Image 1: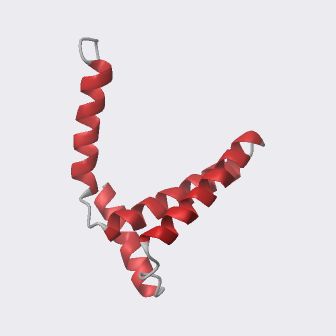
Image 2: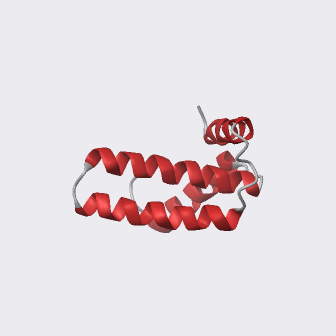
Length: 93
């Protein structure tokens, strides 16, 4: 699956669960909360909790991408090219 497929899967879930009107500000707050839980999990070296928090954060990021109707595959390609140019230019890849 590509990133847009995951985004669309999240959108479908949100619509079926009647969670599609949560607002971006709420999602950003939840993302902050999940990030704190991730930091706590890393500090406690709890791999299962780390995996879960990363999933929750990814889900929220997909939700935010839905709010703005982003083409995530395009964004990924643009970002990847910028990173390669910035960090790998002139070096062997």
